Length: 104
Image (cartoon, rainbow, N blue to C red):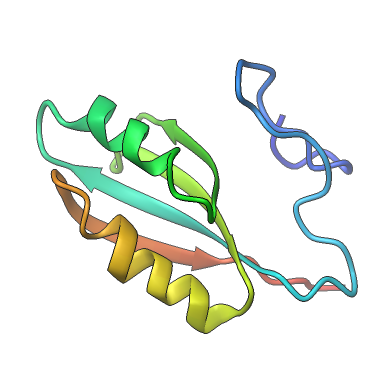
C-alpha cells in the first residue's frame, strides 16, 4: 500500500517496494499524472515502462488515466523526462508533475 513506512506499493506484478526517498539521497522524485486520448492507455503504459527514469507506471481511475513515479538526478532532469519523454508519447494529452518533497 502506498504510504506505509517502508514505502511499499500495491502487491501486484511489477510493483516496487522499499523506501521512495531516504534522507541524504540525491535523487529527485516526482509523480506524473497523465491524461490520455481515448484508446491509448495500454500503449502509453507500455511505452512508460520502457523509460529508464520511470520506476513505476499504472493506469488509474479519476481525472487522470495514468500515474508514473519518476526518479532523476535532480529536479531539472525530472523536468526533461516529463517534457522530452513522457509528453512526447503518442496519445498523451496533458501531464501534471508533482515533485516529492521531504518534510522532516
